[in-house]
Image (cartoon, rainbow, N blue to C red; front, side, top):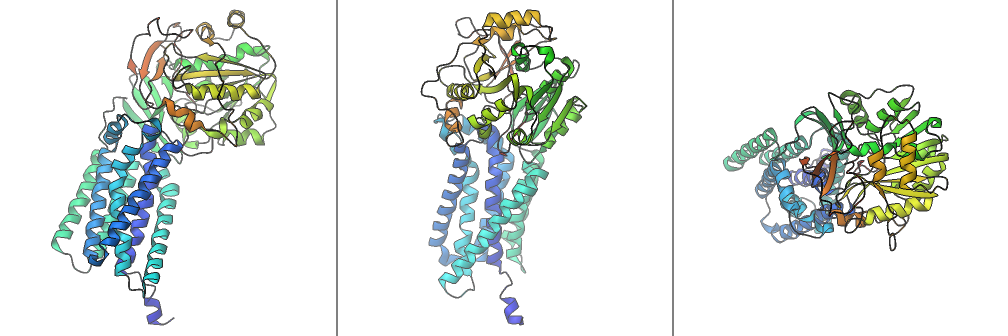
Length: 567
């Protein structure tokens, strides 16, 4: 190859700028999901907002950049890159507070995340949009078509690199603020490269200033009012943000900002979250609880339920948890010990059932949360799969997050209808007297049964389970009205739409005082990431049978979709 031919492949300064703009724009888009999800969930509406804002901002930047392309210069691109880097510092520093402010806007649920995405990511993406038309104008290629194709190719290759590196390398390895800092430094470094060999005073000083701003923003950390306690452990896994936080003598696992498990450090066997007691209801519905041998949990989290079953019964417990770092955190911080009777499997829950020939006496699905539901675990095809892997008198329990009636109950009623189609008999139990969004335990039997509240109360008296389920039995609900609700299938499972009515609703979280309490201490939080606020029991005027019950679910993902976490 001649010297002239090799020089044709040497990137120019505009080439470098357009490549880096592709890397950072797509990297920020992937990162936006991790930043937005803890506040607004990972529904189709959240991702739709992210994609819409990024495409709209880039398009506007392309248009404006094209109009101003005759004045394009390396110096102008330097200022665009530095301006983008400066805004990245704002994202690092103020994202949490901006998210909280945006979430307070009175918008329909499906549009709730749109202002937050627009404020956080619209301006930097708009600025990056100028780079491509500027680069085309400054291109050394002959003709408009060749210059445009060259810029499109470089920008697209940069986007591929940005998406791949952020997804497969950066998010699993680094904190969100560190990734933002890295993108900021890449932009500043590119701006400096465009200055070479000279260093014009104003751009050079601005580069130093923006770099310092990024370091300060990352060093201080996001602005947020977090009273959850002391952070014991924090990491970004390929699936979610994982935090372990101590608040006094209670240790809690948070996944994407939502509470998933809690353990009393002084009394590790105590049920901190009342809802985990409901996992024992299937032991009242099997023919003989002493004959139960095999139990499956889909979703691990802090492994509260699996550890409790291993302790109380002579059973073998399999737990399917897709995120290995969640299981590792349970071992290091929640006293999980695998044994001959308790085995953890790193796999998707549905795939696990498809691949195993084993049958179970009890299956507990604990993989939902208020804003993030693994759709493939809600469908009737999965329910049929679970039913096929139950023993003849086997029992299935799904921990569903929804309101028990009225506004916000659509998902519960559709899920009940779907489960009822797959199983012979279906029951449900509310976990709080509040009518707000809460954990609802839907329990189904493989064989035909007709349990009344009195039947279950009698079995609770007769059976020595090592746990008194009187309050949980009293939370027995009548069959919901499922008219007009769809059966969720692989072809049609509008879970995001069904859940949209719960956005912005108060999410009731109940905690116990100690194992002997018949009345749990009520704690209510609005939004999955908020700390529990002590609150007295609701007045009698609020309907709903039974004692107040459990909160956010304990389980882990046990699923394929990365944006989804267990409840």
